[in-house]
Length: 90
Image (tube, rainbow, N blue to C red; front, side, top):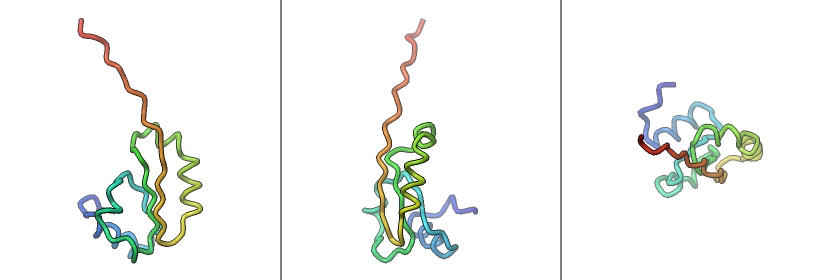
């Protein structure tokens, strides 16, 4: 949609203006950076954005989005991805 350069407040306003009902983000500071009380869009915050973790958590994310109402702020705790150990240099 060409919105990559939009900041949080402008992004939320643009999403609402375009008719979006839900914003899914991994920005855990959004609630402290924006005044959300007057927003109509529901915000779903993921505790991490590691793709395999998000993909595995799909059913939980879908359930949260299905139950989200206007102006809701929902945090979904996703497990941290496992640490990958690099082999020692030879």
